[in-house]
Length: 66
Image 1 (cartoon, helix red, strand yellow):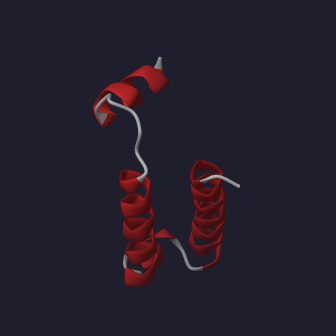
Image 2 (cartoon, rainbow, N blue to C red):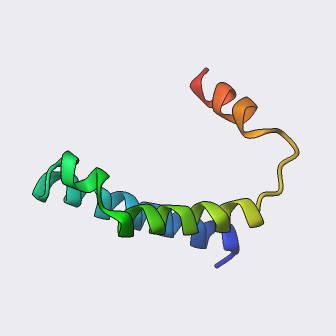
């Protein structure tokens, strides 16, 4: 499995975990959970290290919304 697939799997896993946290603990508690934010920061750092596109993120986001 390449790095991109590995990161996609981690993202899916974190999305599932975050959904369950918001359902069981409530959104207010989830926002205060430093462990969740730490995981997201680590994942963001991994993504930025393996970023291979020359476009800035705002252009990619703009294109994905079209």
